[in-house]
Image (spheres, rainbow, N blue to C red):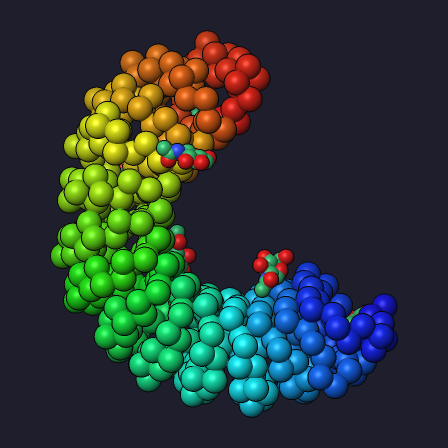
Length: 388
Ligand SMILES: *[C@@H]1O[C@H](CO)[C@@H](O)[C@H](O)[C@H]1NC(C)=O
Ligand SMILES: *[C@@H]1O[C@H](CO)[C@@H](O)[C@H](O)[C@H]1NC(C)=O
Ligand SMILES: *[C@@H]1O[C@H](CO)[C@@H](O)[C@H](O)[C@H]1NC(C)=O
Ligand SMILES: *[C@@H]1O[C@H](CO)[C@@H](O)[C@H](O)[C@H]1NC(C)=O
Ligand SMILES: *[C@@H]1O[C@H](CO)[C@@H](O)[C@H](O)[C@H]1NC(C)=O
Ligand SMILES: CC(=O)N[C@H]1CO[C@H](CO)[C@@H](O)[C@@H]1O
């Protein structure tokens, strides 16, 4: 059973992580009633604790006793939306807050607006995660401008927030001003793709960007072209996720300059992008030229549009992906195909790439002999190969 009595005796505790204890939901007051006044806690983590309406008061009171709080994680508690506004009052006093994670907490449009009114109380905020709040759309129209209070913001995650067109327009004005931003995740928001290309072209003003995640945004060709051009200026780019944007197919050459300058690129996700042979040729030549030497993860799955010739070009050059650890070339779940003459090249790269640990090959139809060869390499080279 849950009791927080011990907390009375450890007022200097700095981190409390009660994540994944669903019994806490409805019982939080049993823990928090023992929190001493002027608790020194810096990190409070209550991920997926089933917190709900009845815990609002206990949580608010607890936060009120934690003026030194630096990280608060309430992610995956689906009903925080209903108690958010009472938390906001107490959160004002957390002027040292650096990390706020409200991923999938059932926030509504008005919660976002209400919360944004106190953004200026957290001048040190580095990480803001408001992702997977599907009712939050519309809330950023006014809240966006207040993000500029976060002069040191490094990570902004607003993926899957059902952003409205107005939200995206407002964010377009503000995101380029967050000059310390390193990670931007706006994926799974359809309005991002149909909005004007300015959001992407202005990313060039964020020289510290390391991760750009715009997967599943229904990107239009103009937006992709603007992103490709802007990313040319992002010399520190590590992660680029463009998956589930069909417009990339046939247009990967637009990223050629980026591949040349982004020498630190570690992860490129291009699954379900309707890639064609020409796109794999781009990857192959970039690899040959040594531009992908840092690449560790490459996901080009779900692109059944590539014909044997394209796979051949790719696998012939894949040995140049010296640092690769994960490669996914699976087909879509609904399809299947036999491997082409490229299979022999695949076998040879498995031997030549010492770092490779995972290879996705789902839905490729393998002959008994091919399966046997892969199984042999799996054990010999300690590579995990996923095939059906
Ligand atoms: C509270 O904790 C008990 C176990 O200690 C658990 O059975 C119960 O479901 C929890 N939630 C509520 C709302 O009481
Ligand atoms: C909270 O715990 C989860 C799961 O252990 C972890 O992923 C997350 O980073 C933690 N959050 C903070 C702010 O420490
Ligand atoms: C794509 O985004 C929608 C929301 O716009 C979401 O429901 C869906 O799960 C996402 N799909 C993938 C593959 O991420
Ligand atoms: C290859 O990856 C390792 C980490 O696994 C990294 O330390 C090293 O710098 C990478 N090499 C290149 C050329 O990026
Ligand atoms: C491959 O796909 C065809 C046509 O979609 C289907 O009839 C067949 O059962 C599939 N074979 C396997 C082994 O999944
Ligand atoms: C999502 C995806 O897999 N895209 C394409 C892959 O190729 C087939 C044709 O083989 C297309 O129909 C898909 O749209």
